Amino acid sequence: MIIIFFGPPGAGKGTQASLTAKTLKIPHLSTGDILRDKLLDQDTLSIKLKKLMDSGNLVSDDILNEIIANRLKLPDCQGGFVLDGYPRTMSQKIFLIDFLESHDLSISKIIDLVIDEKIIIYRIKSRSNIENRLDDREEIIKTRMVKYIEETKPLFKYFRSKYPNDYHIIDGDQDIEKIQDDILKIVKNEDFQP
Ligand code: AMP
Image (cartoon, rainbow, N blue to C red; front, top):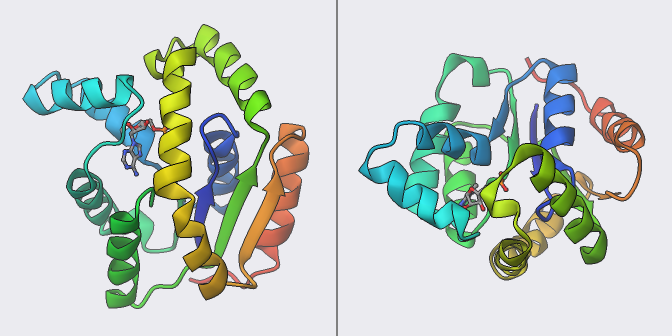
């Protein structure tokens, strides 16, 4: 089963993607987490990445596409996976669709978490106090929102028209448990692929 999560920063996408992956016993592929891991290398590339991420800007499509292609080829992804934070741009979408088609794979469900911008700002501010993520500072949140609106939202039209029955909009302003319940109901309606 292949599931894609969409949602603005602070919508709870990471939490929901992780819970869903755990229940389905498939890997949770968060490109944000993978990139944050890379920062630990402290090499020239990671210094560049850190600059972009701390400012709320997107990392280049080439880097992301390579990360995803390498990750999806690993054996643990052969029974399915949950994508969280990818694709985020038109070029990443094209790369992903090509990759899936050439490997005879298809997307099972798309979960689009929707939430009011004011709630997002409040949520991210409280998260930044706990996790101390530099990119959760209030002035950076705006850049991340703009990137989401300009780069990621335009992808929805494609996914909604290509997967009309599997594209699900979920209200992200509910308890974590209720959102997860809604998602699992959607996901369990589907035949599991071996
Ligand atoms: P996230 O944890 O998903 O909010 O990602 C944190 C940061 O990592 C983003 O603000 C971007 O700088 C970078 N990032 C994560 N995923 C992508 C992606 N698919 N394309 C470009 N940049 C990304």
